[in-house]
Amino acid sequence: MDYNYEYFKKSADYILSKIDFKPEVAMILGSALGSLAEEIENPVVIPYEDIPNFLQSTVDSHAGELILGTLSGKKVVCMSGRFHYYEGYDFEQLVIPIRVFKLLGVQTTILTNAAGAVNLDYEAGDVMIIRDHIKIMGASPLRGKNIEEFGQRFFDVGDMYTERLRDVAKKCAANTELKVHEGVYFFWMGPQFESPSEIKAIRILGGDAAGMSTVTESLTAAHCGMDLLALSLMTNMAAGVLDQPITPHEVGVIANQSAGKLRGYLKDILVNL
Image (cartoon, rainbow, N blue to C red; front, side):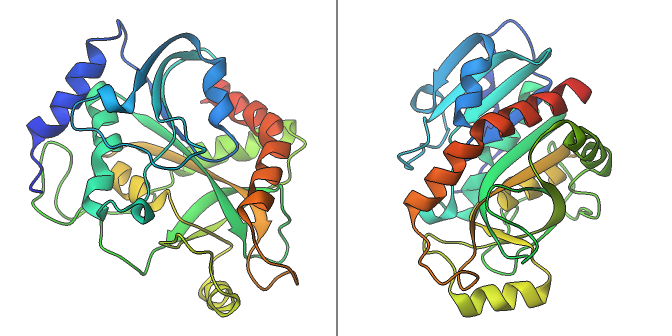
């Protein structure tokens, strides 16, 4: 589909009609952090299905709601549930949430995800601040006609994961029991987990963690000139690291065990932005 500026504005106008403030920070919550949305004060909850031109989440563990309100003293818009390529969406469709956030007035975006630990120094339950990513499969979400209102056709991604925000996250790491690293996220299209040989290749290429989300959102935020912070929770060791299969149950167990600490860590980051 050939999207235009008005396509995204229709979504944003509908959301703005439901609130009396403009959000400062957007958050897209992956596995383990969906419950953070319950802590938003004076929430306005909008089901994705009610928003014109928005996408629908098909992942059972994702609520599929947009929540707007106050969290840690910041006006926020929060996606409880995100969209993935493996759900059947085209890469070009995955620009929609970030572009809508931009039209809401958001300047800073925080992304979270569940990922497999590729770096052998990491353990399940650790958190990685994403310093950079590797994406060598699939199209760019910015493919197609450029919309100048969002950004220029060719754009730099050298500081896509904003250094200033990474510094805040590293400072706040001193206040959490979580073990926090900084590293490189390798994008995997999914929905199957990576094979042991693919994980070996990812490690050789410089990836510290592998996951199936986040990168399309990051690229869109960079195109829009937004500040960006992204955090990965290591919900499992990647294929071949341990002599056992990877299961969604294992991912869910670690996500649930780490949820409380991760919520506290993210709220501390928000306070210090």
